[in-house]
Image (cartoon, rainbow, N blue to C red; front, side, top):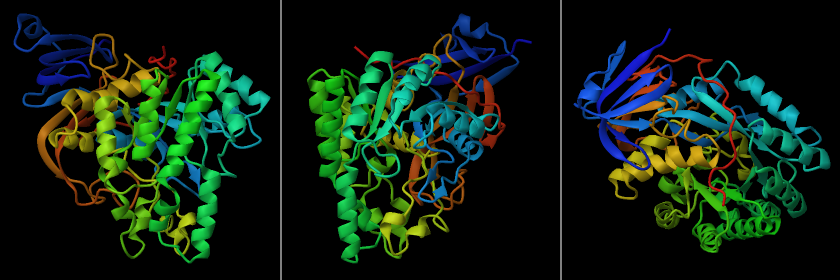
Length: 467
């Protein structure tokens, strides 16, 4: 049985265009667009008609950096694939790319299989995987080739977290050389973890145990140094590089320099670095623990440079690095020792709304909003044009967005499985009204109509930005 839906009367916004158009959906895909009120559009018939008058019709968001159920710091991220993808849908995100983890001494395949078993049958929206490479050995390098062939085309390495995920420069270089051959994209957590561990030890010895010291020891210069080093290693390997969660002015400058030199270097930032700062980390009574993430929040003056990077395309993507830990019982593990606070913030539900507020605040244009939140992440990670746009042939991942609705972000009303909001009490203008995932309504007029298991695993092609 074929199914047809028409979305009428909205302003369709993609990364490249804005137009008042009706959208015809057939069997889970975009079939056609036609200017509203024209004979072509009026002739369409469908079982379901969605009135989008006065609303935006935008592609579903692609959040290319989430950590559902991630084991970290002696606990687990509090969102499951079921709760996390439902929250994503509420926030207008219809595809997540999560991170499967290789444990030291184990194979990539074992880690990938473990993440498949966590996600399969549980997701409200579509999902894909990157692979965290924690143990670069000859076997690992061979496995990277196999994973690229089957649609896991990006590999994350860490210059931070010695003893957990850390790779040294030699391991990084080997993985980069392999990705240069197999078409994979290396994603880098760029912080000098060896130096940071020294500063952590010294701070604790001085009795500096509060959450704010997390930001003070993870210095912007050590993010910039690692970013520079990652760029040079990628250059030696002849490999592309994607630097995750860029937070500091100095790191943006390293990316800008590399891109000006014509290197295939890309950068991502996150809403927390655009909207929060060390002021939050310094909140009294251990409240600052809510804002502990790595890279850390920076002083407020870094925000202007991040916004500028997004406008000049020195930064291409805004993802969330959604990795929630409850304040009670999880963040509290670090009372008396900031180094034991689990690193991560909730945000998968807030990204599209915060970036729409950035449009209203004059930081970015409407089309740039869609570009950094939908189209570019889809292109970067081999999902475009199936995801990230509204065009014939694309999956019907479509959001009806009310640009005038005001909302107050709060843990009381969010759908993420975490007991606080990083943006508690913040008023934003703009709100998701209806969300279709492959043509199926998962949010309908502010009601959840989706189900666990609707979301399917989506293999990816390689990065679409490479020279």
